[in-house]
Length: 145
Length: 210
Picture 1 (tube, rainbow over the protein chains, first blue to last red):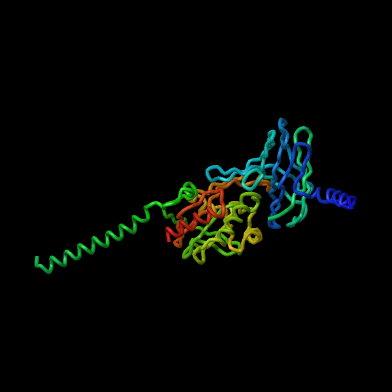
Picture 2 (spheres, chains in turn brown, cyan):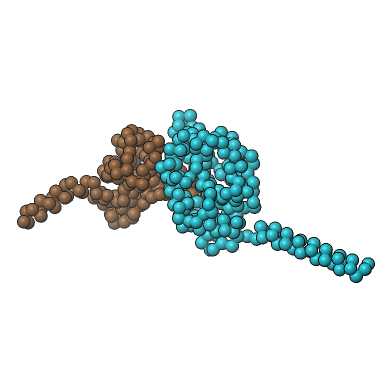
């Protein structure tokens, strides 16, 4: 009986964990990752997530983002200044110790440019986040509206 | 002057003064600022009733769209472009929810006008908008025609990146504009947009100017 439970737990860990919304690597945790579904004619998508740095003293920088499904992925910030929508290309994003940095609608977001194949609601897109200190974190980003 | 004539003159003066007061009352109502709750101050921007210069755009069904199409109904309009991955989809989603949730006068027209007509053909707008809403009508056309309405409305926009190679983004003013049934701009509502706030701001303006 105990063995069965253990086996179930292991299977759960192996099969469920990789597609769960949360990814952890050492002190960095990525949560609430998703890609906004767009009309089929659109080639540019927006991606969002929350980065949590659990280290009490180490700061990180998000330096880049990669995905095989897009020609390139950039980090952008939508800023609304005096009613004007501007997109600022971010070269890096600082993740201070013990801090949470959100990529969310009408704020920081991934600009995922030129999809290489059709994307549908429910697809899960593998994406790699490249951090300072040679850290990289693989995440799965579900596509939804 | 006979008693009768004096009475007649007095009546005429009364009528003239009365009519004058009514006309003054009606016209001064226009000047009275819209009373808005604290949380909508700095969100709704009133403007003097402004008619748009003559323009000729193309709607997403390929039909001409001119000043005449604004007559006889309220119009809610937003400017953007289809290659905009973050702000425009968010705002269009909000506008669609607002159109369904709030009690707009019948025939109220919801518009999305592109500031990137080189890429946003009417066909592309049709496909793009049908993803977000059944309500919102797309407008495209010559850039010069779009500028005819964008300029007086203060819809500033600029292209950033390589326009020739298609790799560019468009920075643009993100307000939602409200036109009365005579096609006159009445208010605009500043970004960012949220369902409750945008809906309340539009309904408040419509009820005031109706």
